[in-house]
Length: 235
Length: 304
Image 1 (cartoon, helix red, strand yellow):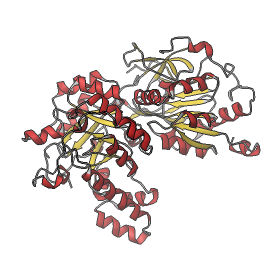
Image 2: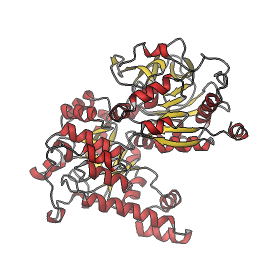
Image 3: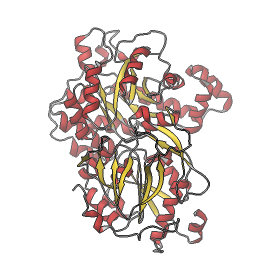
Image 4: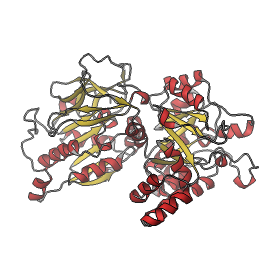
Protein backbone atom coordinates (compact mmCIF):
# COMPACT_ATOMS: atom_id res chain seq x y z
CA UNK A 1 0.00 0.00 0.00
CA UNK A 2 2.80 2.38 0.91
CA UNK A 3 4.53 1.45 -2.30
CA UNK A 4 1.40 2.17 -4.33
CA UNK A 5 1.07 5.58 -2.75
CA UNK A 6 4.64 6.46 -3.56
CA UNK A 7 4.13 5.30 -7.12
CA UNK A 8 1.20 7.68 -7.38
CA UNK A 9 3.23 10.38 -5.63
CA UNK A 10 0.24 10.73 -3.39
CA UNK A 11 0.49 11.07 0.38
CA UNK A 12 -2.81 12.55 1.42
CA UNK A 13 -2.61 14.30 4.80
CA UNK A 14 -4.44 12.37 7.48
CA UNK A 15 -5.40 14.04 10.73
CA UNK A 16 -5.71 12.67 14.23
CA UNK A 17 -8.32 14.49 16.29
CA UNK A 18 -6.15 15.84 19.11
CA UNK A 19 -8.60 17.13 21.69
CA UNK A 20 -7.82 14.32 24.14
CA UNK A 21 -6.72 10.69 24.05
CA UNK A 22 -3.95 8.48 22.66
CA UNK A 23 -3.11 10.81 19.79
CA UNK A 24 0.63 10.10 19.71
CA UNK A 25 0.12 6.36 19.17
CA UNK A 26 -2.23 6.96 16.22
CA UNK A 27 0.20 9.45 14.65
CA UNK A 28 2.97 6.85 14.95
CA UNK A 29 0.81 4.08 13.45
CA UNK A 30 -0.19 6.27 10.49
CA UNK A 31 3.43 7.30 9.94
CA UNK A 32 4.41 3.61 9.99
CA UNK A 33 2.00 3.16 7.04
CA UNK A 34 3.74 5.92 5.09
CA UNK A 35 0.97 8.45 5.63
CA UNK A 36 1.50 12.12 6.32
CA UNK A 37 -0.04 12.35 9.77
CA UNK A 38 -0.85 15.54 11.67
CA UNK A 39 -2.92 16.68 14.61
CA UNK A 40 -6.32 18.36 14.20
CA UNK A 41 -7.72 20.60 16.95
CA UNK A 42 -9.50 23.32 14.94
CA UNK A 43 -11.97 23.59 12.07
CA UNK A 44 -9.20 25.12 9.92
CA UNK A 45 -6.94 22.14 10.56
CA UNK A 46 -9.83 19.78 9.80
CA UNK A 47 -10.36 21.47 6.43
CA UNK A 48 -6.77 20.62 5.45
CA UNK A 49 -6.92 16.85 5.90
CA UNK A 50 -8.25 14.12 3.61
CA UNK A 51 -9.04 11.67 6.36
CA UNK A 52 -9.37 11.68 10.14
CA UNK A 53 -8.63 9.30 12.99
CA UNK A 54 -10.75 9.73 16.09
CA UNK A 55 -8.49 8.30 18.80
CA UNK A 56 -9.15 6.37 21.93
CA UNK A 57 -9.85 8.49 24.98
CA UNK A 58 -12.96 9.57 26.84
CA UNK A 59 -15.80 10.03 24.36
CA UNK A 60 -17.68 12.46 26.65
CA UNK A 61 -14.57 14.64 26.99
CA UNK A 62 -13.78 14.62 23.27
CA UNK A 63 -17.40 15.36 22.26
CA UNK A 64 -17.62 18.15 24.83
CA UNK A 65 -14.44 19.82 23.61
CA UNK A 66 -15.52 19.42 19.98
CA UNK A 67 -18.76 21.21 20.87
CA UNK A 68 -17.03 23.99 22.81
CA UNK A 69 -14.55 24.75 20.04
CA UNK A 70 -16.94 24.70 17.07
CA UNK A 71 -15.79 21.37 15.66
CA UNK A 72 -18.98 19.35 16.02
CA UNK A 73 -20.81 20.65 12.96
CA UNK A 74 -17.73 20.75 10.67
CA UNK A 75 -16.91 17.18 11.72
CA UNK A 76 -20.45 15.97 11.06
CA UNK A 77 -20.50 17.76 7.73
CA UNK A 78 -17.15 16.36 6.54
CA UNK A 79 -18.07 12.83 7.61
CA UNK A 80 -21.49 13.09 5.98
CA UNK A 81 -19.79 14.35 2.80
CA UNK A 82 -17.66 11.23 2.62
CA UNK A 83 -14.40 12.12 4.35
CA UNK A 84 -12.80 8.84 5.44
CA UNK A 85 -12.66 8.45 9.21
CA UNK A 86 -11.43 5.74 11.55
CA UNK A 87 -12.35 5.53 15.22
CA UNK A 88 -10.85 3.24 17.85
CA UNK A 89 -12.72 2.63 21.12
CA UNK A 90 -13.94 6.13 22.10
CA UNK A 91 -13.58 6.93 18.39
CA UNK A 92 -16.00 4.09 17.60
CA UNK A 93 -18.48 5.56 20.07
CA UNK A 94 -18.12 8.97 18.42
CA UNK A 95 -18.76 7.60 14.91
CA UNK A 96 -21.95 5.87 16.06
CA UNK A 97 -25.43 7.21 15.43
CA UNK A 98 -26.67 5.90 18.76
CA UNK A 99 -24.91 5.41 22.09
CA UNK A 100 -26.06 3.00 24.77
CA UNK A 101 -25.05 2.90 28.41
CA UNK A 102 -23.28 -0.24 29.70
CA UNK A 103 -26.68 -1.59 30.80
CA UNK A 104 -28.06 -1.12 27.27
CA UNK A 105 -30.38 1.85 27.69
CA UNK A 106 -30.00 4.67 25.20
CA UNK A 107 -28.20 7.80 26.36
CA UNK A 108 -28.39 11.09 24.51
CA UNK A 109 -24.64 11.38 24.10
CA UNK A 110 -23.35 13.78 21.44
CA UNK A 111 -21.52 12.02 18.60
CA UNK A 112 -20.15 12.87 15.16
CA UNK A 113 -22.17 10.04 13.68
CA UNK A 114 -21.66 8.51 10.26
CA UNK A 115 -21.87 4.78 10.86
CA UNK A 116 -25.32 3.27 11.17
CA UNK A 117 -24.86 1.51 14.45
CA UNK A 118 -25.74 1.60 18.10
CA UNK A 119 -22.64 1.24 20.28
CA UNK A 120 -22.80 0.08 23.87
CA UNK A 121 -20.20 1.86 26.00
CA UNK A 122 -17.95 -0.19 28.32
CA UNK A 123 -19.89 -3.25 27.16
CA UNK A 124 -16.99 -5.61 27.88
CA UNK A 125 -16.75 -4.23 31.42
CA UNK A 126 -14.69 -1.82 33.48
CA UNK A 127 -10.90 -1.71 33.67
CA UNK A 128 -10.55 -4.95 35.64
CA UNK A 129 -12.27 -6.72 32.71
CA UNK A 130 -10.08 -5.04 30.07
CA UNK A 131 -8.29 -7.70 28.04
CA UNK A 132 -6.21 -8.75 25.07
CA UNK A 133 -7.34 -11.32 22.52
CA UNK A 134 -6.47 -12.37 18.99
CA UNK A 135 -8.98 -10.97 16.49
CA UNK A 136 -9.49 -11.96 12.85
CA UNK A 137 -10.41 -8.83 10.90
CA UNK A 138 -11.85 -9.18 7.37
CA UNK A 139 -9.66 -7.24 4.97
CA UNK A 140 -6.56 -7.55 7.15
CA UNK A 141 -4.21 -10.19 5.77
CA UNK A 142 -1.46 -12.02 7.59
CA UNK A 143 -3.33 -13.57 10.49
CA UNK A 144 -5.22 -12.16 13.45
CA UNK A 145 -4.37 -8.83 15.03
CA UNK A 146 -3.90 -8.46 18.77
CA UNK A 147 -7.00 -6.73 20.05
CA UNK A 148 -6.35 -4.55 23.11
CA UNK A 149 -9.78 -3.92 24.65
CA UNK A 150 -9.82 -1.22 27.35
CA UNK A 151 -13.19 -0.55 29.00
CA UNK A 152 -14.22 -1.38 25.48
CA UNK A 153 -17.52 -0.85 23.70
CA UNK A 154 -19.17 -3.29 21.33
CA UNK A 155 -21.58 -2.76 18.47
CA UNK A 156 -25.05 -3.60 19.70
CA UNK A 157 -26.90 -3.28 16.38
CA UNK A 158 -26.11 -2.16 12.86
CA UNK A 159 -27.88 -0.49 9.98
CA UNK A 160 -28.32 -2.34 6.70
CA UNK A 161 -25.34 -0.56 5.13
CA UNK A 162 -22.92 -1.37 7.91
CA UNK A 163 -20.55 -4.27 7.34
CA UNK A 164 -19.16 -6.23 10.29
CA UNK A 165 -15.44 -6.99 9.86
CA UNK A 166 -14.77 -8.74 13.16
CA UNK A 167 -16.64 -10.22 16.09
CA UNK A 168 -15.58 -11.26 19.55
CA UNK A 169 -17.74 -13.53 21.68
CA UNK A 170 -20.65 -12.92 19.38
CA UNK A 171 -20.42 -9.12 19.34
CA UNK A 172 -19.23 -6.98 16.42
CA UNK A 173 -15.93 -5.27 17.34
CA UNK A 174 -14.88 -3.93 13.93
CA UNK A 175 -17.24 -2.41 11.36
CA UNK A 176 -17.15 -0.36 8.19
CA UNK A 177 -19.60 1.68 6.20
CA UNK A 178 -18.57 3.57 3.09
CA UNK A 179 -15.33 5.36 3.91
CA UNK A 180 -15.72 4.89 7.64
CA UNK A 181 -14.04 2.31 9.85
CA UNK A 182 -14.36 1.64 13.57
CA UNK A 183 -12.86 -0.83 16.05
CA UNK A 184 -13.69 -1.54 19.70
CA UNK A 185 -10.02 -2.26 20.28
CA UNK A 186 -6.78 -0.26 20.06
CA UNK A 187 -4.45 -1.35 17.22
CA UNK A 188 -2.43 1.81 17.94
CA UNK A 189 -1.18 0.26 21.19
CA UNK A 190 0.31 -2.83 19.55
CA UNK A 191 2.90 -1.61 17.03
CA UNK A 192 1.08 -3.62 14.34
CA UNK A 193 0.08 -1.10 11.65
CA UNK A 194 -2.18 -3.35 9.55
CA UNK A 195 -5.51 -1.85 10.64
CA UNK A 196 -4.15 1.64 10.05
CA UNK A 197 -2.85 0.50 6.65
CA UNK A 198 -6.41 -0.52 5.80
CA UNK A 199 -7.57 2.97 6.69
CA UNK A 200 -4.76 4.72 4.80
CA UNK A 201 -5.87 2.68 1.78
CA UNK A 202 -9.44 3.95 2.22
CA UNK A 203 -8.19 7.54 2.34
CA UNK A 204 -6.03 7.10 -0.73
CA UNK A 205 -8.87 5.61 -2.77
CA UNK A 206 -11.19 8.40 -1.65
CA UNK A 207 -8.65 11.05 -2.70
CA UNK A 208 -8.06 9.41 -6.08
CA UNK A 209 -11.85 9.13 -6.41
CA UNK A 210 -11.50 5.47 -7.21
CA UNK A 211 -14.54 3.29 -6.93
CA UNK A 212 -15.23 3.21 -3.23
CA UNK A 213 -15.15 -0.55 -3.38
CA UNK A 214 -13.53 -1.80 -0.22
CA UNK A 215 -10.52 -4.09 -0.20
CA UNK A 216 -12.58 -7.09 0.84
CA UNK A 217 -14.65 -6.74 -2.31
CA UNK A 218 -18.09 -5.89 -1.03
CA UNK A 219 -19.80 -3.31 1.05
CA UNK A 220 -22.05 -0.37 0.47
CA UNK A 221 -21.28 2.52 -1.82
CA UNK A 222 -19.22 5.09 0.02
CA UNK A 223 -19.72 8.78 0.15
CA UNK A 224 -22.87 10.28 1.45
CA UNK A 225 -24.74 8.93 4.41
CA UNK A 226 -27.41 11.60 4.52
CA UNK A 227 -30.13 9.16 5.37
CA UNK A 228 -28.29 8.07 8.49
CA UNK A 229 -28.22 11.58 9.80
CA UNK A 230 -31.96 11.39 10.23
CA UNK A 231 -31.94 8.02 11.90
CA UNK A 232 -31.70 8.48 15.61
CA UNK A 233 -28.81 10.92 15.56
CA UNK A 234 -29.00 12.43 19.05
CA UNK A 235 -28.93 16.04 18.00
CA UNK B 1 -20.07 -9.61 30.83
CA UNK B 2 -21.59 -11.76 28.19
CA UNK B 3 -21.32 -15.50 28.42
CA UNK B 4 -19.27 -16.77 25.51
CA UNK B 5 -21.91 -18.54 23.44
CA UNK B 6 -19.74 -18.54 20.34
CA UNK B 7 -16.45 -18.33 22.18
CA UNK B 8 -13.45 -17.90 19.96
CA UNK B 9 -10.58 -20.24 20.81
CA UNK B 10 -8.30 -17.25 21.38
CA UNK B 11 -6.71 -16.57 24.75
CA UNK B 12 -8.49 -13.91 26.74
CA UNK B 13 -6.00 -12.16 29.01
CA UNK B 14 -6.85 -9.50 31.56
CA UNK B 15 -4.49 -7.31 33.58
CA UNK B 16 -1.64 -7.36 31.04
CA UNK B 17 0.94 -4.54 31.12
CA UNK B 18 -0.44 -3.31 27.79
CA UNK B 19 -3.99 -3.17 29.15
CA UNK B 20 -2.83 -1.40 32.33
CA UNK B 21 -0.53 1.12 30.68
CA UNK B 22 -2.88 1.45 27.71
CA UNK B 23 -5.67 2.60 30.03
CA UNK B 24 -3.49 5.56 31.08
CA UNK B 25 -2.73 6.32 27.43
CA UNK B 26 -6.48 6.90 26.96
CA UNK B 27 -6.42 9.58 29.68
CA UNK B 28 -3.73 11.68 27.98
CA UNK B 29 -4.52 15.31 27.33
CA UNK B 30 -7.16 15.13 30.03
CA UNK B 31 -7.95 16.29 33.56
CA UNK B 32 -8.56 13.93 36.47
CA UNK B 33 -10.54 15.59 39.25
CA UNK B 34 -10.81 14.86 42.97
CA UNK B 35 -14.45 14.42 44.04
CA UNK B 36 -16.01 13.54 47.39
CA UNK B 37 -19.68 13.00 46.43
CA UNK B 38 -21.65 11.58 43.48
CA UNK B 39 -22.91 15.13 42.79
CA UNK B 40 -19.36 16.42 42.46
CA UNK B 41 -18.50 13.45 40.24
CA UNK B 42 -21.38 14.39 37.94
CA UNK B 43 -20.19 18.02 37.79
CA UNK B 44 -16.69 16.81 36.93
CA UNK B 45 -17.97 14.51 34.18
CA UNK B 46 -20.17 17.23 32.68
CA UNK B 47 -17.19 19.59 32.72
CA UNK B 48 -15.17 17.13 30.64
CA UNK B 49 -13.03 15.29 33.19
CA UNK B 50 -11.47 12.10 31.76
CA UNK B 51 -11.71 10.42 35.17
CA UNK B 52 -12.53 11.21 38.77
CA UNK B 53 -10.60 10.42 41.94
CA UNK B 54 -13.07 9.31 44.60
CA UNK B 55 -11.99 10.29 48.09
CA UNK B 56 -13.55 11.25 51.40
CA UNK B 57 -11.79 14.56 51.86
CA UNK B 58 -9.87 16.63 49.34
CA UNK B 59 -6.23 17.21 50.33
CA UNK B 60 -6.93 20.76 51.53
CA UNK B 61 -9.38 19.35 54.09
CA UNK B 62 -7.01 16.54 55.05
CA UNK B 63 -4.50 19.26 55.87
CA UNK B 64 -7.07 21.28 57.79
CA UNK B 65 -8.50 18.38 59.81
CA UNK B 66 -5.34 16.41 60.49
CA UNK B 67 -5.52 12.86 61.83
CA UNK B 68 -4.92 9.67 59.88
CA UNK B 69 -6.15 9.81 56.28
CA UNK B 70 -7.27 6.41 54.98
CA UNK B 71 -8.91 4.72 52.00
CA UNK B 72 -12.47 5.97 51.36
CA UNK B 73 -15.64 4.29 52.53
CA UNK B 74 -16.76 1.58 50.05
CA UNK B 75 -20.33 2.94 49.97
CA UNK B 76 -19.01 6.33 49.01
CA UNK B 77 -16.88 4.82 46.21
CA UNK B 78 -19.85 2.76 44.96
CA UNK B 79 -21.97 5.90 44.89
CA UNK B 80 -19.46 7.67 42.67
CA UNK B 81 -18.92 4.62 40.43
CA UNK B 82 -22.67 4.48 39.85
CA UNK B 83 -22.99 8.22 39.21
CA UNK B 84 -20.68 8.56 36.20
CA UNK B 85 -19.69 6.76 33.00
CA UNK B 86 -16.05 7.91 33.08
CA UNK B 87 -13.32 5.92 34.89
CA UNK B 88 -13.15 6.14 38.67
CA UNK B 89 -9.87 6.09 40.59
CA UNK B 90 -9.41 5.75 44.33
CA UNK B 91 -6.50 6.13 46.76
CA UNK B 92 -4.84 3.57 48.98
CA UNK B 93 -2.23 4.39 51.61
CA UNK B 94 1.39 3.78 50.63
CA UNK B 95 2.22 0.14 51.31
CA UNK B 96 -1.33 -0.70 52.41
CA UNK B 97 -1.90 -3.53 49.95
CA UNK B 98 -5.01 -4.69 51.82
CA UNK B 99 -6.68 -1.34 51.09
CA UNK B 100 -5.62 -1.77 47.48
CA UNK B 101 -7.17 -5.26 47.45
CA UNK B 102 -10.44 -3.76 48.68
CA UNK B 103 -10.35 -1.10 45.96
CA UNK B 104 -9.77 -3.78 43.33
CA UNK B 105 -12.68 -5.79 44.73
CA UNK B 106 -14.86 -2.68 44.50
CA UNK B 107 -14.05 -2.49 40.80
CA UNK B 108 -12.37 0.91 40.62
CA UNK B 109 -10.53 1.53 37.36
CA UNK B 110 -7.21 2.79 38.78
CA UNK B 111 -5.63 2.76 42.23
CA UNK B 112 -3.55 5.74 43.37
CA UNK B 113 -1.02 4.60 45.97
CA UNK B 114 -0.90 8.07 47.38
CA UNK B 115 1.26 10.12 49.70
CA UNK B 116 -1.78 12.30 50.36
CA UNK B 117 -3.05 9.55 52.68
CA UNK B 118 -1.08 8.65 55.77
CA UNK B 119 1.56 6.03 54.83
CA UNK B 120 0.93 2.54 56.20
CA UNK B 121 4.44 1.22 55.66
CA UNK B 122 7.58 3.26 56.03
CA UNK B 123 9.82 0.92 54.06
CA UNK B 124 7.74 -0.80 51.37
CA UNK B 125 5.37 0.25 48.65
CA UNK B 126 2.71 -2.26 47.49
CA UNK B 127 3.67 -4.89 44.91
CA UNK B 128 1.53 -3.61 42.09
CA UNK B 129 2.14 -6.60 39.81
CA UNK B 130 -0.08 -8.61 42.15
CA UNK B 131 -3.15 -6.67 40.98
CA UNK B 132 -5.39 -6.68 37.92
CA UNK B 133 -6.31 -3.05 38.61
CA UNK B 134 -3.57 -0.71 37.40
CA UNK B 135 -1.78 1.73 39.72
CA UNK B 136 -0.71 5.33 39.46
CA UNK B 137 2.01 6.53 41.84
CA UNK B 138 3.57 9.86 42.67
CA UNK B 139 7.21 10.79 42.15
CA UNK B 140 9.40 13.79 42.88
CA UNK B 141 12.29 12.69 40.66
CA UNK B 142 13.15 10.16 37.97
CA UNK B 143 14.61 7.57 40.34
CA UNK B 144 11.43 7.52 42.40
CA UNK B 145 9.32 7.23 39.22
CA UNK B 146 11.39 4.28 37.98
CA UNK B 147 11.26 2.52 41.36
CA UNK B 148 7.47 2.76 41.27
CA UNK B 149 7.41 1.47 37.69
CA UNK B 150 9.68 -1.41 38.71
CA UNK B 151 7.08 -2.27 41.38
CA UNK B 152 4.40 -2.35 38.68
CA UNK B 153 3.01 1.20 38.47
CA UNK B 154 1.34 1.73 35.08
CA UNK B 155 1.19 5.52 35.31
CA UNK B 156 3.22 8.20 37.11
CA UNK B 157 2.21 11.61 38.38
CA UNK B 158 4.67 14.18 39.58
CA UNK B 159 3.72 14.76 43.22
CA UNK B 160 3.66 18.48 43.66
CA UNK B 161 2.28 19.47 47.05
CA UNK B 162 -1.37 18.46 47.26
CA UNK B 163 -3.92 20.69 48.95
CA UNK B 164 -1.87 23.87 48.74
CA UNK B 165 -3.21 25.47 45.57
CA UNK B 166 0.42 26.34 44.94
CA UNK B 167 1.93 25.05 41.72
CA UNK B 168 5.57 25.59 42.69
CA UNK B 169 6.25 22.02 43.84
CA UNK B 170 4.49 20.54 40.81
CA UNK B 171 6.79 22.58 38.60
CA UNK B 172 9.86 21.57 40.61
CA UNK B 173 9.07 17.85 40.41
CA UNK B 174 8.10 17.77 36.74
CA UNK B 175 11.14 19.81 35.73
CA UNK B 176 13.35 17.50 37.76
CA UNK B 177 11.90 14.33 36.20
CA UNK B 178 12.10 15.63 32.66
CA UNK B 179 15.54 17.16 33.22
CA UNK B 180 16.85 13.84 34.45
CA UNK B 181 15.31 12.07 31.46
CA UNK B 182 16.95 14.55 29.09
CA UNK B 183 20.34 13.94 30.74
CA UNK B 184 19.96 10.17 30.32
CA UNK B 185 19.42 10.56 26.57
CA UNK B 186 22.97 11.88 26.17
CA UNK B 187 24.63 9.25 28.37
CA UNK B 188 26.67 6.52 26.70
CA UNK B 189 26.34 2.88 27.72
CA UNK B 190 29.09 3.11 30.35
CA UNK B 191 27.48 6.12 31.95
CA UNK B 192 24.06 4.47 32.06
CA UNK B 193 25.23 1.87 34.57
CA UNK B 194 26.38 4.60 36.92
CA UNK B 195 23.22 6.57 36.22
CA UNK B 196 21.16 3.55 37.27
CA UNK B 197 23.12 3.34 40.51
CA UNK B 198 22.73 7.06 41.17
CA UNK B 199 19.02 6.91 40.40
CA UNK B 200 18.65 3.77 42.53
CA UNK B 201 16.62 2.28 39.69
CA UNK B 202 16.90 -0.94 37.62
CA UNK B 203 19.41 -0.65 34.77
CA UNK B 204 16.99 -2.08 32.17
CA UNK B 205 14.42 0.62 32.93
CA UNK B 206 17.07 3.33 32.87
CA UNK B 207 18.26 2.15 29.47
CA UNK B 208 14.69 2.06 28.16
CA UNK B 209 14.15 5.66 29.27
CA UNK B 210 17.48 6.75 27.78
CA UNK B 211 16.57 5.24 24.41
CA UNK B 212 12.96 6.46 24.28
CA UNK B 213 13.57 9.87 25.83
CA UNK B 214 10.52 9.46 28.01
CA UNK B 215 9.07 7.24 30.70
CA UNK B 216 7.66 3.89 29.54
CA UNK B 217 4.33 4.92 31.13
CA UNK B 218 2.16 8.02 30.95
CA UNK B 219 3.32 11.00 33.06
CA UNK B 220 0.76 13.38 34.55
CA UNK B 221 1.25 16.32 36.89
CA UNK B 222 -0.45 16.69 40.27
CA UNK B 223 -0.39 18.68 43.46
CA UNK B 224 -1.13 22.39 43.31
CA UNK B 225 -2.94 23.07 40.03
CA UNK B 226 -5.66 25.65 40.78
CA UNK B 227 -6.15 27.68 37.60
CA UNK B 228 -6.40 27.11 33.83
CA UNK B 229 -3.00 28.78 33.42
CA UNK B 230 -1.52 26.36 35.98
CA UNK B 231 -2.78 23.45 33.85
CA UNK B 232 -1.40 25.06 30.68
CA UNK B 233 1.96 25.55 32.41
CA UNK B 234 2.23 21.91 33.47
CA UNK B 235 1.27 20.70 30.00
CA UNK B 236 3.85 22.94 28.37
CA UNK B 237 6.45 21.64 30.81
CA UNK B 238 5.75 18.15 29.51
CA UNK B 239 2.91 16.71 31.60
CA UNK B 240 0.64 14.54 29.46
CA UNK B 241 -2.35 15.54 31.58
CA UNK B 242 -3.17 16.93 35.02
CA UNK B 243 -4.72 15.87 38.28
CA UNK B 244 -6.66 18.63 40.00
CA UNK B 245 -7.44 18.00 43.64
CA UNK B 246 -8.71 20.72 45.91
CA UNK B 247 -8.40 23.37 43.19
CA UNK B 248 -11.85 22.81 41.73
CA UNK B 249 -14.26 22.09 44.53
CA UNK B 250 -12.54 24.51 46.93
CA UNK B 251 -13.12 27.36 44.48
CA UNK B 252 -16.03 29.78 44.04
CA UNK B 253 -17.61 28.22 40.91
CA UNK B 254 -16.49 24.58 40.58
CA UNK B 255 -18.44 23.70 37.39
CA UNK B 256 -17.10 26.68 35.50
CA UNK B 257 -13.54 26.32 36.79
CA UNK B 258 -13.52 22.58 36.00
CA UNK B 259 -14.62 23.18 32.40
CA UNK B 260 -12.07 25.98 32.04
CA UNK B 261 -9.20 23.77 33.26
CA UNK B 262 -10.26 21.03 30.81
CA UNK B 263 -10.16 23.47 27.90
CA UNK B 264 -6.85 24.98 28.99
CA UNK B 265 -5.35 21.51 29.25
CA UNK B 266 -6.21 20.71 25.61
CA UNK B 267 -5.30 24.17 24.26
CA UNK B 268 -2.37 24.65 26.64
CA UNK B 269 -0.22 26.14 23.88
CA UNK B 270 -2.87 28.64 22.73
CA UNK B 271 -2.75 31.61 25.16
CA UNK B 272 -5.87 33.14 23.61
CA UNK B 273 -7.93 30.13 24.62
CA UNK B 274 -6.35 30.05 28.07
CA UNK B 275 -7.12 33.77 28.47
CA UNK B 276 -10.72 33.29 27.33
CA UNK B 277 -11.47 30.45 29.69
CA UNK B 278 -9.79 32.23 32.60
CA UNK B 279 -12.38 35.01 32.64
CA UNK B 280 -15.06 35.24 35.31
CA UNK B 281 -14.17 32.10 37.21
CA UNK B 282 -14.80 33.60 40.63
CA UNK B 283 -12.47 32.96 43.50
CA UNK B 284 -9.69 30.42 43.25
CA UNK B 285 -8.94 28.29 46.27
CA UNK B 286 -6.89 29.98 48.98
CA UNK B 287 -3.27 28.98 48.50
CA UNK B 288 -0.58 27.99 50.97
CA UNK B 289 3.04 29.09 50.74
CA UNK B 290 4.81 25.70 50.68
CA UNK B 291 7.81 27.12 52.58
CA UNK B 292 5.56 27.65 55.60
CA UNK B 293 4.50 23.99 55.79
CA UNK B 294 5.83 22.39 58.95
CA UNK B 295 7.97 19.27 58.80
CA UNK B 296 5.70 16.22 58.44
CA UNK B 297 3.04 18.10 56.52
CA UNK B 298 4.93 17.97 53.25
CA UNK B 299 3.18 15.09 51.53
CA UNK B 300 5.78 14.95 48.76
CA UNK B 301 8.35 13.71 51.27
CA UNK B 302 6.27 10.60 51.93
CA UNK B 303 7.38 7.63 49.85
CA UNK B 304 10.94 6.98 48.67
